[in-house]
Image 1 (cartoon, rainbow, N blue to C red):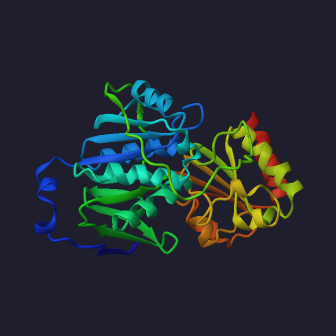
Image 2 (cartoon, rainbow, N blue to C red):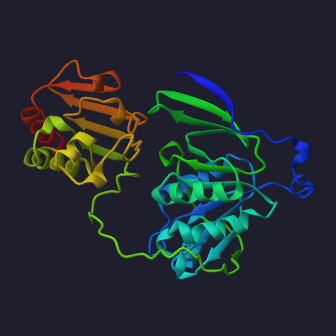
Length: 343
Protein backbone atom coordinates (compact mmCIF):
# COMPACT_ATOMS: atom_id res chain seq x y z
CA UNK A 1 0.00 0.00 0.00
CA UNK A 2 1.08 3.54 -0.70
CA UNK A 3 0.36 6.19 1.90
CA UNK A 4 0.30 9.87 1.05
CA UNK A 5 -0.36 12.80 3.30
CA UNK A 6 -2.52 15.56 1.91
CA UNK A 7 -3.86 18.70 3.54
CA UNK A 8 -7.39 19.23 2.27
CA UNK A 9 -7.79 22.84 3.20
CA UNK A 10 -6.00 25.06 5.69
CA UNK A 11 -7.46 27.72 7.94
CA UNK A 12 -5.17 29.76 10.23
CA UNK A 13 -6.11 29.19 13.85
CA UNK A 14 -6.42 32.93 14.35
CA UNK A 15 -9.15 33.07 11.71
CA UNK A 16 -11.45 30.73 13.61
CA UNK A 17 -14.29 32.31 15.59
CA UNK A 18 -13.27 32.86 19.20
CA UNK A 19 -16.47 31.20 20.37
CA UNK A 20 -15.55 28.02 18.47
CA UNK A 21 -12.11 27.92 20.08
CA UNK A 22 -13.47 28.43 23.55
CA UNK A 23 -16.17 25.76 23.51
CA UNK A 24 -15.71 22.02 23.67
CA UNK A 25 -15.90 20.31 20.30
CA UNK A 26 -18.81 17.95 19.60
CA UNK A 27 -19.79 15.56 16.83
CA UNK A 28 -23.18 15.58 15.09
CA UNK A 29 -23.99 12.10 13.78
CA UNK A 30 -26.73 11.63 11.18
CA UNK A 31 -28.59 8.38 11.93
CA UNK A 32 -30.81 6.54 9.45
CA UNK A 33 -33.71 4.29 10.37
CA UNK A 34 -36.27 2.10 8.65
CA UNK A 35 -39.94 3.04 8.70
CA UNK A 36 -40.47 0.96 11.84
CA UNK A 37 -37.66 2.77 13.68
CA UNK A 38 -34.96 0.12 13.28
CA UNK A 39 -31.55 1.76 13.08
CA UNK A 40 -29.59 1.06 9.90
CA UNK A 41 -26.52 -1.11 10.41
CA UNK A 42 -24.41 1.46 8.56
CA UNK A 43 -25.46 4.16 11.03
CA UNK A 44 -24.52 1.95 13.99
CA UNK A 45 -21.06 1.70 12.42
CA UNK A 46 -21.01 5.48 11.94
CA UNK A 47 -21.65 5.89 15.68
CA UNK A 48 -18.75 3.56 16.42
CA UNK A 49 -16.55 5.65 14.13
CA UNK A 50 -17.75 8.86 15.79
CA UNK A 51 -16.53 7.58 19.17
CA UNK A 52 -12.99 7.42 17.76
CA UNK A 53 -13.05 11.19 17.28
CA UNK A 54 -12.97 11.62 21.04
CA UNK A 55 -15.79 14.18 21.16
CA UNK A 56 -19.21 14.10 22.82
CA UNK A 57 -21.75 12.86 20.25
CA UNK A 58 -25.18 14.22 19.39
CA UNK A 59 -27.29 11.80 17.32
CA UNK A 60 -29.73 13.29 14.80
CA UNK A 61 -32.87 11.38 13.78
CA UNK A 62 -35.27 12.74 11.16
CA UNK A 63 -38.60 11.72 9.65
CA UNK A 64 -41.75 10.01 10.87
CA UNK A 65 -39.80 7.18 12.53
CA UNK A 66 -37.33 9.53 14.26
CA UNK A 67 -38.82 9.19 17.75
CA UNK A 68 -38.89 5.38 17.54
CA UNK A 69 -35.30 5.37 16.32
CA UNK A 70 -34.21 7.64 19.17
CA UNK A 71 -35.86 5.37 21.74
CA UNK A 72 -34.21 2.34 20.13
CA UNK A 73 -30.76 3.91 20.32
CA UNK A 74 -31.30 4.99 23.90
CA UNK A 75 -32.62 1.63 25.07
CA UNK A 76 -30.77 -0.95 22.97
CA UNK A 77 -27.28 0.37 22.24
CA UNK A 78 -24.32 1.48 24.32
CA UNK A 79 -22.49 4.53 22.97
CA UNK A 80 -20.20 5.87 25.68
CA UNK A 81 -19.66 9.28 24.09
CA UNK A 82 -23.35 9.91 23.32
CA UNK A 83 -24.49 13.02 25.19
CA UNK A 84 -27.84 13.84 23.53
CA UNK A 85 -30.31 12.91 20.81
CA UNK A 86 -32.06 15.39 18.53
CA UNK A 87 -35.33 14.37 16.89
CA UNK A 88 -36.92 16.07 13.88
CA UNK A 89 -40.18 14.19 13.34
CA UNK A 90 -41.44 16.29 10.42
CA UNK A 91 -42.66 13.87 7.73
CA UNK A 92 -41.08 16.11 5.10
CA UNK A 93 -37.84 14.37 6.09
CA UNK A 94 -39.23 10.92 5.28
CA UNK A 95 -37.13 8.94 2.78
CA UNK A 96 -34.25 11.35 3.48
CA UNK A 97 -34.85 13.60 0.49
CA UNK A 98 -31.63 15.66 0.57
CA UNK A 99 -33.36 18.82 -0.59
CA UNK A 100 -35.30 18.80 2.69
CA UNK A 101 -32.81 17.24 5.10
CA UNK A 102 -29.83 19.39 4.13
CA UNK A 103 -31.24 22.68 5.44
CA UNK A 104 -31.82 21.12 8.89
CA UNK A 105 -28.28 19.74 9.05
CA UNK A 106 -26.78 23.07 7.98
CA UNK A 107 -28.81 24.95 10.58
CA UNK A 108 -27.61 22.65 13.36
CA UNK A 109 -23.99 22.79 12.17
CA UNK A 110 -24.02 26.58 12.33
CA UNK A 111 -23.74 26.10 16.09
CA UNK A 112 -20.02 26.62 16.89
CA UNK A 113 -20.21 23.68 19.29
CA UNK A 114 -20.06 21.16 16.44
CA UNK A 115 -16.61 20.48 15.05
CA UNK A 116 -17.51 17.27 13.18
CA UNK A 117 -20.44 16.00 11.12
CA UNK A 118 -20.46 12.27 10.41
CA UNK A 119 -22.68 10.15 8.15
CA UNK A 120 -22.52 6.62 6.79
CA UNK A 121 -21.43 6.19 3.16
CA UNK A 122 -24.95 5.09 2.27
CA UNK A 123 -27.13 6.41 -0.54
CA UNK A 124 -28.65 8.97 1.86
CA UNK A 125 -25.30 9.97 3.33
CA UNK A 126 -23.80 10.45 -0.13
CA UNK A 127 -26.75 12.67 -1.05
CA UNK A 128 -26.71 14.87 2.04
CA UNK A 129 -22.99 15.35 2.76
CA UNK A 130 -21.92 17.18 -0.44
CA UNK A 131 -24.90 19.52 -0.20
CA UNK A 132 -24.01 20.37 3.39
CA UNK A 133 -20.43 20.95 2.29
CA UNK A 134 -21.49 23.27 -0.52
CA UNK A 135 -23.71 25.41 1.72
CA UNK A 136 -21.06 25.66 4.46
CA UNK A 137 -18.23 26.08 1.93
CA UNK A 138 -16.37 23.11 3.38
CA UNK A 139 -14.72 20.12 1.70
CA UNK A 140 -16.17 16.73 2.76
CA UNK A 141 -13.87 13.78 3.45
CA UNK A 142 -15.60 10.77 1.93
CA UNK A 143 -15.53 7.02 2.49
CA UNK A 144 -13.23 7.10 5.51
CA UNK A 145 -11.95 3.65 6.51
CA UNK A 146 -9.89 4.61 9.57
CA UNK A 147 -9.74 7.53 12.01
CA UNK A 148 -6.27 8.38 13.28
CA UNK A 149 -7.33 11.36 15.37
CA UNK A 150 -9.87 14.20 15.27
CA UNK A 151 -8.33 15.75 12.16
CA UNK A 152 -6.53 12.84 10.47
CA UNK A 153 -8.35 10.22 8.42
CA UNK A 154 -7.58 7.34 6.07
CA UNK A 155 -9.59 6.90 2.89
CA UNK A 156 -9.14 4.71 -0.22
CA UNK A 157 -8.31 6.05 -3.67
CA UNK A 158 -8.08 4.45 -7.13
CA UNK A 159 -10.49 1.61 -6.34
CA UNK A 160 -8.75 0.94 -3.04
CA UNK A 161 -5.26 0.49 -4.49
CA UNK A 162 -4.01 3.49 -2.52
CA UNK A 163 -4.86 4.49 1.04
CA UNK A 164 -4.47 8.23 1.53
CA UNK A 165 -3.90 9.64 5.00
CA UNK A 166 -5.67 13.00 4.96
CA UNK A 167 -5.14 15.77 7.47
CA UNK A 168 -7.99 18.28 7.58
CA UNK A 169 -7.59 21.68 9.22
CA UNK A 170 -11.06 23.00 8.48
CA UNK A 171 -13.06 24.47 11.35
CA UNK A 172 -15.64 21.71 10.83
CA UNK A 173 -14.91 18.26 9.48
CA UNK A 174 -17.60 16.71 7.27
CA UNK A 175 -17.04 12.95 7.15
CA UNK A 176 -18.67 9.92 5.58
CA UNK A 177 -17.47 6.52 6.80
CA UNK A 178 -17.38 3.12 5.12
CA UNK A 179 -19.59 1.03 7.38
CA UNK A 180 -17.72 -2.22 6.71
CA UNK A 181 -14.56 -0.70 8.21
CA UNK A 182 -16.06 -0.04 11.65
CA UNK A 183 -17.89 -2.36 14.06
CA UNK A 184 -21.49 -1.59 14.90
CA UNK A 185 -22.34 0.03 18.22
CA UNK A 186 -22.59 -2.61 20.93
CA UNK A 187 -25.79 -3.67 22.63
CA UNK A 188 -26.75 -2.12 25.94
CA UNK A 189 -28.36 1.18 26.79
CA UNK A 190 -27.48 4.85 27.11
CA UNK A 191 -29.24 7.34 29.38
CA UNK A 192 -29.28 10.58 27.41
CA UNK A 193 -31.89 13.32 26.88
CA UNK A 194 -34.00 13.45 23.73
CA UNK A 195 -34.83 16.93 22.43
CA UNK A 196 -36.86 18.15 19.48
CA UNK A 197 -35.27 20.10 16.65
CA UNK A 198 -36.66 23.50 15.76
CA UNK A 199 -38.94 23.53 12.72
CA UNK A 200 -37.21 24.61 9.52
CA UNK A 201 -38.85 26.47 6.60
CA UNK A 202 -40.04 24.19 3.82
CA UNK A 203 -37.60 23.82 0.97
CA UNK A 204 -38.31 25.98 -2.07
CA UNK A 205 -37.17 23.11 -4.32
CA UNK A 206 -40.23 21.29 -5.65
CA UNK A 207 -39.28 17.67 -4.98
CA UNK A 208 -41.59 14.90 -3.81
CA UNK A 209 -41.28 11.19 -3.14
CA UNK A 210 -43.15 9.13 -5.75
CA UNK A 211 -42.53 5.61 -4.42
CA UNK A 212 -40.10 2.73 -4.32
CA UNK A 213 -39.90 -0.83 -5.56
CA UNK A 214 -37.66 -2.87 -3.28
CA UNK A 215 -36.55 -6.46 -3.70
CA UNK A 216 -37.78 -8.22 -0.56
CA UNK A 217 -35.91 -11.19 0.83
CA UNK A 218 -35.70 -13.12 4.07
CA UNK A 219 -31.94 -13.42 3.63
CA UNK A 220 -29.52 -11.33 5.68
CA UNK A 221 -28.96 -7.82 4.36
CA UNK A 222 -26.03 -7.89 1.96
CA UNK A 223 -24.36 -4.82 3.44
CA UNK A 224 -24.21 -6.21 6.97
CA UNK A 225 -24.26 -10.01 6.52
CA UNK A 226 -21.55 -12.03 8.27
CA UNK A 227 -21.51 -14.52 5.38
CA UNK A 228 -21.81 -13.78 1.66
CA UNK A 229 -21.92 -16.08 -1.36
CA UNK A 230 -21.28 -14.16 -4.59
CA UNK A 231 -21.54 -15.30 -8.19
CA UNK A 232 -19.74 -14.05 -11.27
CA UNK A 233 -19.82 -14.27 -15.03
CA UNK A 234 -18.41 -17.80 -14.86
CA UNK A 235 -21.92 -19.02 -13.98
CA UNK A 236 -22.92 -18.06 -17.55
CA UNK A 237 -26.72 -17.82 -17.12
CA UNK A 238 -29.45 -17.09 -14.58
CA UNK A 239 -30.51 -20.73 -14.26
CA UNK A 240 -27.00 -21.83 -13.29
CA UNK A 241 -26.68 -18.87 -10.91
CA UNK A 242 -29.90 -19.84 -9.14
CA UNK A 243 -29.10 -23.56 -9.10
CA UNK A 244 -25.58 -23.17 -7.68
CA UNK A 245 -25.40 -19.95 -5.65
CA UNK A 246 -28.81 -20.07 -3.97
CA UNK A 247 -28.53 -23.57 -2.39
CA UNK A 248 -24.99 -22.80 -1.18
CA UNK A 249 -26.16 -19.53 0.36
CA UNK A 250 -29.13 -21.29 1.99
CA UNK A 251 -26.81 -23.89 3.52
CA UNK A 252 -24.48 -21.22 4.92
CA UNK A 253 -27.35 -18.91 5.94
CA UNK A 254 -25.59 -16.30 3.84
CA UNK A 255 -26.54 -13.25 1.79
CA UNK A 256 -26.20 -13.43 -2.00
CA UNK A 257 -24.03 -11.02 -3.99
CA UNK A 258 -22.75 -10.73 -7.53
CA UNK A 259 -20.23 -9.01 -9.76
CA UNK A 260 -21.19 -6.23 -12.14
CA UNK A 261 -20.64 -8.58 -15.08
CA UNK A 262 -23.17 -11.02 -13.61
CA UNK A 263 -25.67 -8.22 -13.00
CA UNK A 264 -25.22 -6.75 -16.49
CA UNK A 265 -25.74 -10.23 -17.97
CA UNK A 266 -29.09 -10.53 -16.20
CA UNK A 267 -28.03 -13.30 -13.84
CA UNK A 268 -29.45 -11.46 -10.82
CA UNK A 269 -30.91 -8.17 -9.59
CA UNK A 270 -28.64 -5.11 -9.58
CA UNK A 271 -29.27 -4.61 -5.84
CA UNK A 272 -26.89 -7.56 -5.30
CA UNK A 273 -23.92 -5.93 -7.03
CA UNK A 274 -20.68 -5.81 -5.06
CA UNK A 275 -17.74 -3.68 -6.10
CA UNK A 276 -16.52 -0.19 -6.84
CA UNK A 277 -19.88 0.81 -8.35
CA UNK A 278 -21.92 -1.44 -6.05
CA UNK A 279 -21.96 -2.32 -2.38
CA UNK A 280 -18.87 -2.63 -0.21
CA UNK A 281 -18.94 -5.63 2.12
CA UNK A 282 -16.57 -7.09 4.70
CA UNK A 283 -18.17 -10.29 6.03
CA UNK A 284 -16.49 -12.95 8.14
CA UNK A 285 -16.80 -15.36 5.20
CA UNK A 286 -16.92 -14.46 1.49
CA UNK A 287 -17.38 -17.27 -1.03
CA UNK A 288 -16.64 -16.22 -4.63
CA UNK A 289 -18.19 -18.58 -7.18
CA UNK A 290 -17.09 -18.15 -10.79
CA UNK A 291 -15.56 -14.74 -10.09
CA UNK A 292 -12.34 -13.90 -11.92
CA UNK A 293 -11.36 -11.07 -9.56
CA UNK A 294 -11.48 -7.82 -11.55
CA UNK A 295 -10.05 -4.91 -9.60
CA UNK A 296 -13.46 -3.16 -9.53
CA UNK A 297 -15.00 -6.15 -7.76
CA UNK A 298 -12.09 -6.61 -5.36
CA UNK A 299 -12.56 -3.01 -4.21
CA UNK A 300 -15.91 -4.04 -2.77
CA UNK A 301 -14.94 -7.23 -0.91
CA UNK A 302 -11.18 -7.42 -0.29
CA UNK A 303 -11.61 -6.51 3.40
CA UNK A 304 -13.55 -9.73 4.04
CA UNK A 305 -12.10 -11.72 6.93
CA UNK A 306 -11.92 -15.07 5.07
CA UNK A 307 -12.19 -15.32 1.26
CA UNK A 308 -12.91 -18.64 -0.46
CA UNK A 309 -12.57 -18.68 -4.26
CA UNK A 310 -14.03 -21.34 -6.54
CA UNK A 311 -13.02 -21.06 -10.20
CA UNK A 312 -12.08 -23.28 -13.11
CA UNK A 313 -9.17 -21.00 -14.08
CA UNK A 314 -6.15 -21.53 -11.80
CA UNK A 315 -4.69 -18.20 -13.03
CA UNK A 316 -7.75 -16.14 -12.02
CA UNK A 317 -6.72 -12.99 -10.08
CA UNK A 318 -9.23 -13.83 -7.33
CA UNK A 319 -6.83 -16.50 -6.05
CA UNK A 320 -4.26 -13.80 -5.23
CA UNK A 321 -6.51 -12.41 -2.48
CA UNK A 322 -8.23 -15.65 -1.46
CA UNK A 323 -7.42 -17.44 1.79
CA UNK A 324 -8.66 -20.72 0.31
CA UNK A 325 -8.91 -21.61 -3.38
CA UNK A 326 -10.66 -24.47 -5.13
CA UNK A 327 -9.99 -25.08 -8.84
CA UNK A 328 -12.57 -27.11 -10.71
CA UNK A 329 -15.78 -27.25 -12.72
CA UNK A 330 -18.38 -25.14 -10.90
CA UNK A 331 -21.20 -27.49 -11.89
CA UNK A 332 -19.46 -30.32 -10.05
CA UNK A 333 -17.63 -28.57 -7.23
CA UNK A 334 -20.38 -26.29 -5.89
CA UNK A 335 -23.14 -28.96 -5.57
CA UNK A 336 -20.69 -31.32 -3.84
CA UNK A 337 -19.57 -28.54 -1.49
CA UNK A 338 -23.18 -27.64 -0.71
CA UNK A 339 -24.04 -31.27 0.02
CA UNK A 340 -21.08 -31.75 2.38
CA UNK A 341 -21.73 -28.47 4.20
CA UNK A 342 -25.36 -29.47 4.72
CA UNK A 343 -24.20 -32.59 6.56
